[in-house]
Image 1 (cartoon, rainbow, N blue to C red):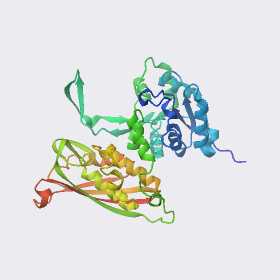
Image 2 (cartoon, rainbow, N blue to C red):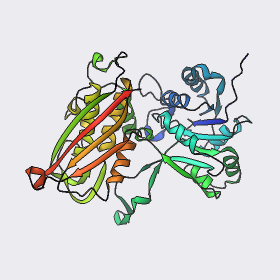
Image 3 (cartoon, rainbow, N blue to C red):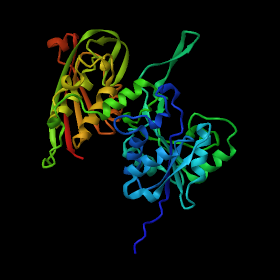
Image 4 (cartoon, rainbow, N blue to C red):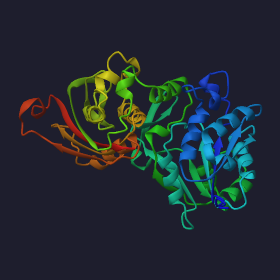
Length: 401
């Protein structure tokens, strides 16, 4: 009889939070996104990732609910999973999870159930980053907003965002490092990476995902629901054609004139000092062209079908919201993104110094798919040459997931 090897990895899924800010009347891990809970969605990605022991830390009184979600999501990995009761704080809950880790486990990932839509590949990237020389690794996203220091209602100064990253989960650690850091911790930290860093250890950064946002407020929950619930298009349109195995190519274009309020948003980046583009959202012609190219390739209509002016939740929205939602639509129909190429026609802003940053932000919003951005002027010809607006053309390649 073949006996499956004991996993050397454990994933602690922290689901013991009260969810006060969500205001749903129950712990947020047990609030429904669709017909399934936040926790069920989180566990789907966990079990789709590297083989691991899975420990769900649930609030007292919700152990049975957690076990129901575990058994439903685990499939043939049920023997690798268990539920334990959490504590009054996050660190106490993680510590309870650590106590349940099998002796043979060498690496431990700590994941917030509230990051319910984190793709499985993020788990893989964290695991692959860990080694003897790299005792800890966490996923991060570039910070695209302009960050200000604020005190007593007044702007005190700007913060250089080139050195900033938004931390996500799962956060991975060598087991011995994490256990020792918890043993010596004498204060509460906002995440496990901060606790391990305070113990003197180096933390590596890997690429995160725009889909790994944390469900904290009602707006976050609405966003998650929009990503997993089909848009009001026909069921036939969203049904995957399982016989279509060839890659597909789509082309998208978008044009916006200058004249909007606030600062310019383009290619997922804010451009301080540049005039804003006009539009229902932020007027980001680059991200809108990408959306059209992706939807065109998948045969799912166009940007107006899914993000039109009849969708008030997208008023003023930035690239991340559009691109993450599009990735969800593609996934629901069995497609994944091979790569995306965009050409921008504009007299301004100058892309040369921020091209790499734009590519990284757009790629992260698309779940890590490669994105290349080229920019050109039109030698003074047309509305772009006169500096009246921005045009963008995108080409996208899709392959069957």
